[in-house]
Length: 373
Ligand SMILES: *Cc1c(COP(=O)(O)O)cnc(C)c1O
Image (cartoon, rainbow, N blue to C red):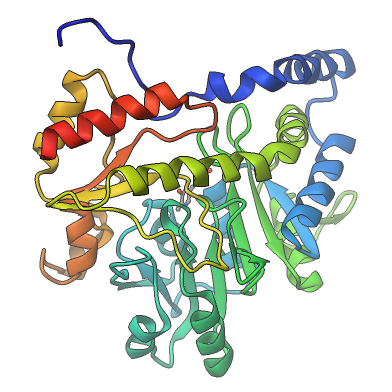
């Protein structure tokens, strides 16, 4: 076929925003009219609404998802001399936050099925210096939360959930983020719940930790003009809070749509040689399907076939973190984290987003089949 085909993006935020366009326009307008750009009721209201949606006792907003991890680690008093276990395959920020706190990153390989940590893989890495495990629900797939929360409880270690890719996911009916000491969120525009710039939050059931994180995010100020510690400036803007308040009621439907699209890929792309489809998790769990990531033995071939059909795809992520130049001093080689390495070699994210049409998905399915069969 030689007809020019309209491009299919990996993610079409405009399609997602179209049904709520009028309310988003109103958010811009109100922000300008009030000219109260930082703090205010929208921020307070969003923290409360997000806490209720997820099931957190406390949510403290901040400037981005990386700050959220740093603030959670600082709030837990983790720093030099401490070890934190981190997955070998995740977005760089998860490990970076540990390193910038002065703590030592201990990399753990990921599970072939969930692409996340399991209690069984983490336990052999525990040492007397281990203070925390940061679990990432990579691509939205909930990791082994029952196992990890039991393990961390047993050894009195903090479980931190990096939920940047998993808004709307749950395990046994309970939201991801509520299984550990603290959860961190990013509202970067492309996440399952994204704002119009950078945004983030820490969620916790621990009121002391919530208070500490809030103080640290606000220059260590406990009462006006009294700074009890040297904190930082990490704030969610009022505009971002308004946008998030407008989008939050749609989150559940969007994640439902992501799951329906994933189910259809799963049915239509089953049993193709050299193609491993993502697991959808246990029937009483809910995958966030932030990304639909297949593992393809002939990835380069599949990628170029999709590109030829004007279909976007992406690699999340090509390099296991222990092999990043920043972690070269740890001395790891390409065979040390085999599952992370396999993702680096074979993972390919296919287009999947709320508002994706059946036509668009048909074209992706046909192109994948044609490339690999
Ligand atoms: C996006 C992301 C972050 C960082 O969030 P920012 O808001 O970009 O700082 C952290 N961890 C994971 C797993 C992410 O996907």
